[in-house]
Length: 298
Image (cartoon, rainbow, N blue to C red):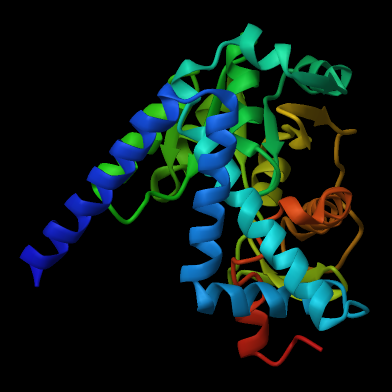
């Protein structure tokens, strides 16, 4: 069994490496074709994920017809294909190359967050071109670390971390993150967190449904006073992007556990950002799984 897993992992890494080499050598038009190919592959080969996406869209947009849900789910898969292919070129990105194709909005909120002197929690989702967001922050001279979940294949994990680190971003595995996060914030650095995944820590509203939500960012904010800066990078067509920072978030009033007030504010912001470009969120992730298991989803 272990030998089979090793062979399978080696095949996955080999294919990913070969595709990445081809993508890097491609023209922008060629990369767009690669993105469509990967997106179609994701859509056609992942029936279970398609079903999850259709269900999630139904929870978020109950007014949608079946055809509308399928259209949005397909668009999301195609966008994810584009995002994966784009990320394969991350070690070629520079500050100038990103800014040449990107309208950057809300830098005053970034500066306000850093001016607080207590560190910054940079919050985004699996939305748009999130890897470009973190890369630009690092390439523009700010010290940023990102909290990540390791990939299942070690070779893929090494490749992904190499691409993330190419911009100067430090990668911190999620399981060992608590102490490094506090250390970074004490020296007024930035820590990137993507808190839009399923969990069982607490259940708070998201698109009108209770969703399992992490408490970590809220607890860290209460402990450190770090600024909470939301940001996103959207693809807007023809090889162009909009990278946007939003007003700093503050905890909402609530009677929940420690940290929940901020997580309510984060979920509300994530929902509004997703509504800007719903086709660019990862609907294939089973966001409401824990809530469904507890009968909390309407």
